[in-house]
Image (cartoon, rainbow, N blue to C red; front, top):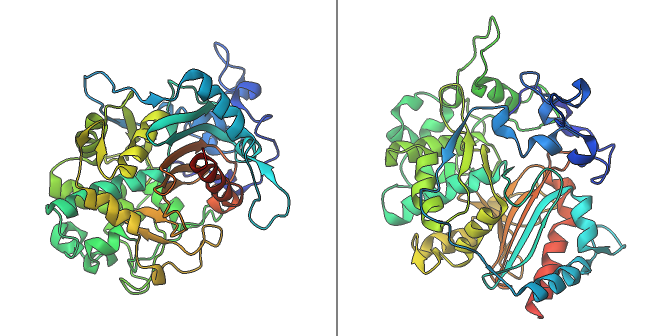
Length: 430
């Protein structure tokens, strides 16, 4: 997530509950014009501070330039819903499902967890049918929401498709695909090491540290005019060309967003298409989605492959169902089954380390998070609570969009992952 360089408030705790910080309650951007204290503006970047972010996550293209991920001109292919009476009953039943959060002795209901995690949208599909759908805060059924680092999973999926189809060699060195990378630490990494984030590159992603590399990266990528005297890199790709080494390629997993933008550059170079065009051609158009998505771009028009997509809740559900169906949707095969199977199988668990204790002993591959739990669940994940959660055993796909006050999902996992498991078990018992 490199969207706002001045967002130092990301790490503060939430002074307001989900109900009290609802943007409709707060009155953000209401009126013609809104009152001065209710306005959210550029270029001061306050739009990414809590509680303003609860409005901003549905309005990113009003702050930053974007490029469309086109859905084409055809009519959408409708999702399949259970019958209305059953849908209403299921909502009540699912809302009442109870679970015990991590490191807690007190039970919580599913509905309580939605508010605890500042949920803006929740969609659940079971055996291909929508069984639960709710909207909160800034999001309505015809709206779109920032998905943050779930964007990485789009990029990784496109790369995995190319690898399986034979158009991308994941054993190739980055410098052999992108000669312009020069002496950057990325030069001697393999494409697979970039895909699985096992590169040895220097980059810190502590959102609470104003001097972390994530903010230097944000300044490089900012589409706004650079301040007087700025002499750093201009754009994502210039930043990647000057990355220093740290550690050894292939040794261990380190979650670093610059890998995703390096991968975006690789698949664009090999395919001859921007990641937005590639996502449209291989995913959005053939999936029969309802809405075009969009992706933020840097000052040179390069799409942010590590966190820039905004999309609709239902369309993200379609992507999750496509993964669950191993590449098929609406009777059409979009990519080989091996693609989804490779991702679901996960990466090298010995390289995952213990840096994500709330997630558990998982793995990371092709920019997807794999739980290795009893259900074989895996997920696309983004800061502030974005999730596409695929549970093959339960035949369940769950999509949550949220605007949790703090960026780290470690604050959200304790009341999310057990909730997902509880709902999966409820649906399996139907």
